[in-house]
Structures are given as structure tokens and as C-alpha cells.
Amino acid sequence: MNFSEGTWGSHIGRPARRVLSRSVATVASDLLPLGDFACLLLAASLSTLLYAQWLAPPDLAPGFGGDFASAALVAAVLAPFILYDKRFGAVASRGQMPVLVRSHVLRFAIFAGVVLALGGVSQALEPFPRGWLVTWFATSLLLTSLTRVLVARTVRHLQRQGVLTEVIAVVGAGPVADRLVQALRQTRPETIELLGVFDDKIIGAVPGVIKPAGTLAQLIELGKTRQIDWILLTLPPTAEQRVLSVVQRLKALSVPIGLCPPNVGLTLPYRTIGYVGGNVPVNLLADRPIKRWDAVVKGAEDYLIGGVITLLLLPLLALIALAIKLDDPGPVIFKQRRHAFNNHEFDIYKFRTMRWNPAAATENLRQTSRNDDRVTRVGRFLRASSLDELPQLFNVLKGNMSLVGPRPHAVNMRTEDRLCHEITGLYAHRHRVKPGITGWSQVNGSRGAVDTTAQLHRRVELDLHYIENWSLLLDLKILVLTCREVLKRTNAF
Image (cartoon, rainbow, N blue to C red; front, side, top):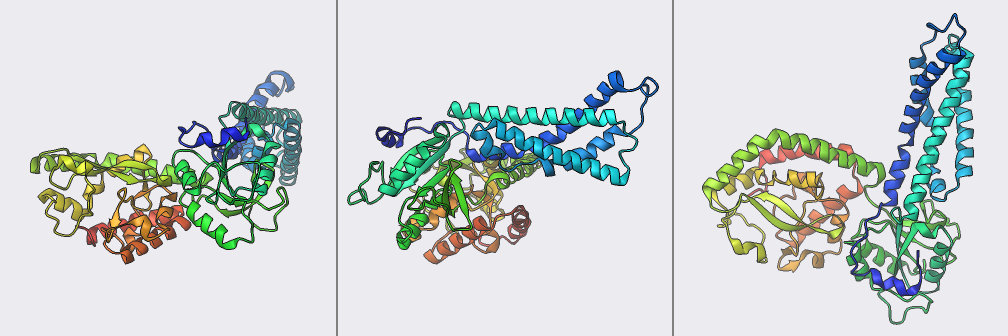
């Protein structure tokens, strides 16, 4: 990995390289308890075969006592709580195999001691031959250890191939940025990709070895096409207003933001601390709103519930398509560019509700108004009943949208003849999660067109409330409330 100054600016405008986020790797390491569960059950089966074949006395071989399957199942359920090591990902990425194995052997010894103690007190282990227990523990230790070594070696291999990479951008040119880069050079350089130092104050910046690669605006644009795992601020903590201003701007991206101390490597006196490169501590100022297992749960919600709803509604979708075709010539589906996660753009699908105009796709479209003469007869019913939104289920299945989230607005949407992001700097913060078919705003009275700045501020406020307070239960609540809102037809036209 080359950290030389000459390579820094080359990232701007370059297509994103396909890498796995370290958060994906963390989720993968969290799956080890499932592997332990499977290993203990497999070890029980192997131990039973080995014991019956070679270790059991002849008179016990045909059918020795003990409910091996039940005992193994109980122990396998207990194992993940004792064997799980939250440091596994960091240790594996550093390639510290001896540390990894020693830690696991110690945890397994504790697990075996707990099983024997509980079994002895409850006398549940009395029917089990000692030979089988020894074989089972030994086989379980071997299988769980091999699983960890295999996962750790896979992590290291992906790191060497440049696939499992922590992508970092630094904000604030000067000596602190230089020290941070030097610290990152010294810690697992093969796992780190530095995009560069970005600073709006390129002229007049504190002199440093590393020259700025671009401005804050360029970093935000870069974040739309490049995966970024960390944005690190090397601004003076005393410059509170500037730090707050920079954080507010960078919240347009769904990226963790950390403040690096002036003395890089110094442990910070804050409760919320993140570690970059495994070793460099930073004060975590902002984080992804939905991450790790929360992201897995929300993705499962979208694909499972969205898939079932789509299958159930296929006949209705076909009937609506036929009605549109009979009412007005032109395509059934209307596509329009909308803002998506991390300020990306995508084509949203809707049933066409307006008269067909081939030039509309290239026009600067205005928001639909009540009694809009462009709306067809069928379209008026579809809009009032929100049935025109149903094709967005396919956006959900494609991964562009979520069932629940801030509604995606048209690119360059205007309110009172002003671009929305010019009215409020918080507007881009809505894009820190995937847009949704429905959302917290829609079930709290902010549904339909945004005609005034007051309505826009209210919409943004509700959307940010959803983002900061997301939970699976909140999503399910919104889905239920959406059914009520559709029946009321409030602000739908």
C-alpha cells in the first residue's frame, strides 16, 4: 500500500474499487457463535462414532447409555456465550494466530469446566461414559479452533489482496494530519487505504508535509461513489464552532466521523471512543445511524416482507397496468431520478398517473399540485389511494429503497423556487439511510407535496427523528400506521 503524497489526489474522480467494508467483516466474525454451535453438534456425532467403534467396552458397544444428542444440544446452546470473543476481528486482522489460539483454548477450558460443574451438580452426566466426554471435548476444541484459524487466515488473505480495506479520509491539513498519517503507516498498512487530506482552507492552512487533496465539497462528492469507513478530523478541539460546522456538513454522508487528538495515539477522556486501524484512538463524533446487525435486520425486513407483499399484489399490479394502458397511450411505468442513500441517484418506479409527455423526462419538473390538469382519470384515483407507489416494491427488491425511510425527493427539487438543500443544510442528512416507500413523516401529517419552507423544515425534522431513533419495532409501527393513512387519503392528490 502506497501512502506517498503523490498518490493522494488521484482518488478524486476515479471509479470506486470493489472492496468489502470492515463492518461487513465484523458482522461475519459475529457469526462465529453459529459455527461453534454447529461444531459442538458435529463433534458429538463424531465422538459417538469413535467411542462406539474403538473405545467402548464390548458389552456397551451395541447400545451404550446416555442421550448424547440432547446433552450436546444443551452444551452447544451454552457454548457461544462463553466462547465468543469480541476481540476476534481485531486479533485476526493483525494476524496474531498464537494470541487467537491461546485465547480460545482458555475460553474453551472455562466452557468445559462450566459443563462439568453443571453436569456434576445436576447428575445429568452420570449416564455418559468418561471416554465419550473426553473424546467430545477434544473433538469440539479441535473443530472450533480450526474454524477460528480458517476464518482468521481468510481475513488476512483478503487484506493482502486489498479486498478487506479500511478506507479513511482526513479533514484538516497541518502537523496533526501528518502525525496521523505516520501513525496509520505504522499500523497494518495493508488494511488501510488513505483517500487524502481535505481542507477548505487550502490557502493559509497550517503548513504540513501532506498537501490537501481537495475541499470538503469534493470529499462529499467523492463519498457518493467511494466507500469510506472513517472520516477523521485533525482540527483543533478548541475550534469548537468549526468542528461542529464541519460535522454538520459531513453528516450528508453515512460515515463515522472521528476527532483525532493533537497528540496522535493519546487515549481520549471520552466515553465514546473508536479505534482506527485497530490502534489509533479517536473521539467518535458521529456514526452510521443503521450499522452492523441493525443493517442486517433492516435488509432482511425489506427483502422478506417486501418479497411477500410483491407476490401477493402481483394480480393487482397487472390490473392497474391494464387500466393505465386503456386510459392513456404511453408506458405504464414512470421513472424519475431521485436521491438515494449517501446522496446517490437512482430511477424510482411509479405507475404513470399523468398524460404521456415524451419530453417530460428531460424537463425540470414541478411538483404535482391539487387539481393538476396533467393527471389522468385513472391517475387521479391511483394517486388518491397511493396505489401509484406500488412499483417501488421492485426498487426495494433491487436494493435502491427500503420499505420504510425518508421519502426520496426528485433531484434538484425546489420549494418556493429555491433548491431544498439551499433552504436547510440538514436536507442532505435525510440521505444517511435508504429512502422508503413510506416513512415517519408520512404517518405524522407530512405527506404529499412540500410547497413552503415551513413544510420542508417539518419534513426534514420528522425524517431525521426517524433516522436517529430507528428500530425494527418503529418500522413495523410505521407500516401499520401507513395502512391507516392510505385509507384516510390525507394530502393525497
